[in-house]
Length: 168
Image 1 (cartoon, rainbow, N blue to C red):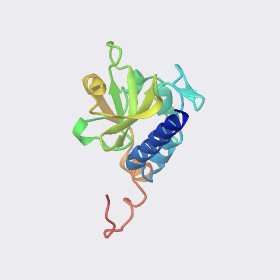
Image 2: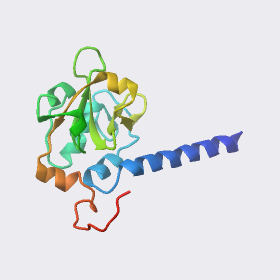
Image 3: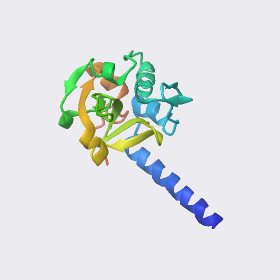
């Protein structure tokens, strides 16, 4: 029984690593988010000892000298509105999880996924197409200008002039 549990945990760890690796490549933003994946949820939390959703987004962007307002609702009041089909890594994505307006925020990371502070899982990746989030999606805002986007959100290989490199 003990061996089965250890095998299951090891398998899940490998699966999670592969899942994160497929979305997280080599950008500065990916690295910053990857460093805190798994950090526990803490209401009002703004540090690596625990995050709430807006504490997480504020923490990540602060690493790049970008100051965000403290709450998800106030973060929704800044930036440029972005259509869902035009999302790019680094965009803030907003949800109504309380039934009372903007109450949750995450960071779009590409491939239809976003990083956020889940009350049950801590900092994690979720799919934008997950029925829970799809039903509660409110919109997105772009807070990175083109120069910042190119500096922190584009993979190292993607931003180089290697036309012969095949991207999987």
